[in-house]
Length: 247
Image (cartoon, rainbow, N blue to C red; front, side):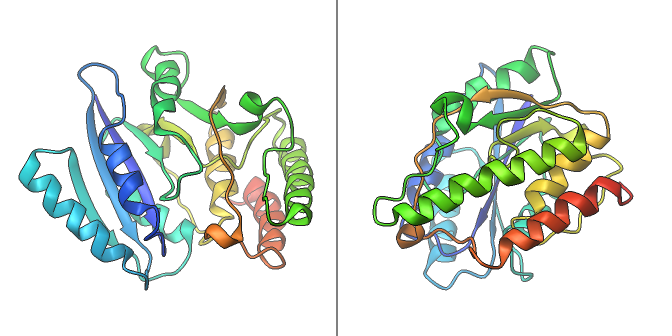
């Protein structure tokens, strides 16, 4: 078995090397190989150079297989889509290049798939936190409230349209068998890709199993990329559009 970790990167120089090292050393089930696919999305802060250095190091030290790609079309969704076209593993996991999530949760995410209980797992931040208030921006409590309240709205809208009861549709940790992607085409370019990927997998018949994962939110001062006044409108459109558009 091989795990393909797809990591989109855009201006994450402050955390990228740490995350790359953590993923390379992440605990995996015995005998499982690791493939890291890093997709730079036009970084201007030195992230690409950090990724290149890590790739050179991995080749000389016998580290996991690492492939570095570039994606000229800006947006996290575009970068993830590019990465998905290159995966060769049996199981795919999406990993951000910041430090909000914990790679030590990999065994929890992989176990239900490897045990044959499901083909699709979501790492739920809400299940672990036990609350809808998962975002805490120390320097901006108003933004924290807006993001948490917005999460309730968007999650509720998604659940209502797709007939599911998920606690965390927008989690970064989406883990699935590569075969789940067969026959699907994707179009979203930014954070609306979360809804397109999840929605199309559900419509194809893959009901996700949620497991609780650790989460440490970061604010805009730490590099959060969401455009608070522009992106939410694309999420509403994506939730509705991909509920009814062709797979």
